[in-house]
Length: 239
Ligand code: 6PG
Image (cartoon, rainbow, N blue to C red):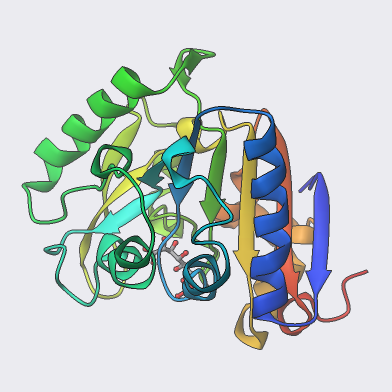
């Protein structure tokens, strides 16, 4: 995999600060950005940092928040990616409601995937025939999945649709996910990967091991910048 930049930090908070520095730099040059958030536990340190230290340092009205994926659960469910951001960030900053574009996990999955895809095309610029995000933040599962594109559903990497229904391989939980062509149409893809549990998969992906082709993360090759923000625990002996 050809990363544009691999940035290694001491700990998850430093990772969050490193990404924030780059987000602030993007904001300096644009009036509005479209930013897709990833879910799971890794980005929670980022949302807390933004609420604690950037509530008044960032003009949140310049950012339209979208999601890379969402679990098919109501927004008040502990599993909800939106619910986590609402609790940790949105409840503590001033941001217009109209800037928050959540995937409706409580809706019929197929209908929501179609609706979200339409919303993307209404709000985002269309480049290369696809909605173009300024920033897409992604995490990586220990199985090499990203967003909700899992190894057993590699076809989502080149789906015709912009947004699709996926299924978690273990729990069977249904998910709404952006598809590969939209993720790869971003101007900046920022992977946030922390913790020793991700070390082996991170090494496999970033060293371009032949097995990496089995994992969705290895197929994220955006038209724009591809940055990895790692802590030392995840980076291991990567240089
Ligand atoms: C989700 C995420 C998913 C996540 C990885 C890593 O909805 O779970 O979008 O792709 O980024 O599974 O999750 P952790 O950060 O919890 O390890």
